[in-house]
Image 1 (cartoon, one colour):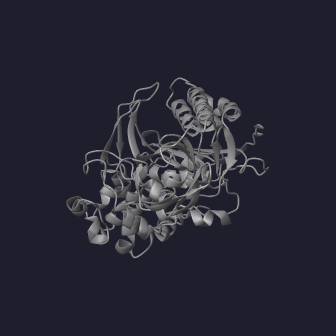
Image 2 (tube, rainbow, N blue to C red; image 1 turned 90 degrees about the vertical axis):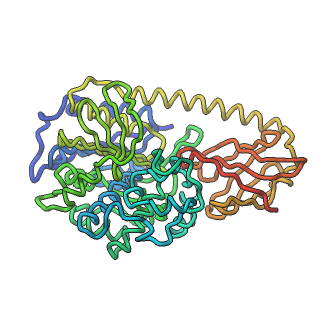
Image 3 (cartoon, one colour; image 1 turned 180 degrees about the vertical axis):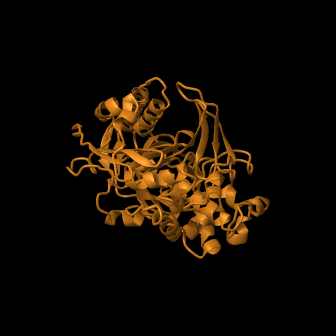
Length: 507
């Protein structure tokens, strides 16, 4: 792979003046560029944008690399990236603002605002509150249902209907399970609460008063924007372009696109009790509500320094770190991973945006900058994260080679390939069908335009690869009894969903 040339655009924003670099930690002042340059030689990342807020100043805003691999346009502080689940803090904040204004209460029942809200257990359905929706305590397993929704042709209302068909893995409010659909449902509740759609509220109540003039609420509008990073992923170790993911059916969970300059205004407001440029944009009570722990994720396991708890508020992860409170989130959608980190006691904010979904550098860089500002030793997180990724990719390459060898052996299946063809159904998802292509099966989905290629591994097992590479490559299996195919079990990449789906054969 050709190495990308590094392009650095430094902007120092400080209310009409420049921040003094002498106030920066040595790592940020003297070593940051070399650190990023070295990382770009190891990770296949086309472009990175970095922002550091201190107090009410954006003291560091840099772009590295390019908008799209193989093209010359450079990343800068105004380049738009999809921020993925960093959208959730916007949704949680909006909900808290509506509650502060007395338009709703955070403990209101969801079905009071959204009568069509449905869950498998009627008692649970009647207990779910607005705050439950935005803190991941509905009882769902992490990402449960996301295969059904993610880049599908379902509308928001159809996602709501499908959500009610899933049986949560856990009892209500007993386990933290990351639930994108919960944030969608919160966004749907906002319309009867406020009289405006979620995206209209985002624009009017947050983007406009915060001066986030380039930010975009819906993924459908990103293709019209200028200076927008393009999404990339890795397919069998090679960088590949992706189309912009259409995820507006889950918009309140992850559809926002923004830049370093725009996101710095958001960060400044959260570090200043909701005030931006002497205007109270977000009520201070709403800021505090989003940081109130509502769910227990678990114990923190930092590789080097002291951290103990890991909690969740309303769109923010809350943890302790070397005696400070960290308020943060990450975001991942097809082709992008990002991080936003607040250290309120230090009036510090760190933003990292990247345009490939296969890198750990966006988190490594965040920790390195954070440690530098806290006066902690240099750890080379990038080296640690990269080594783990290299080892994992080597293991995956070995697995792919072995499974390709198995396919080439043309081992017999438990029934003729034609017997696997036909229509299958899952109660929550709907239909899929398989067509016999001679030496493999081709899968077609009711709610996705992508296809799946199933290559026999012998017996009941097949290798499943998707035309959309973000859904991964997985071994899948059928149930065959007395030569009759009964059902099919689907698995997709953990980036999309961990839960398996059983489809019963209909014909």
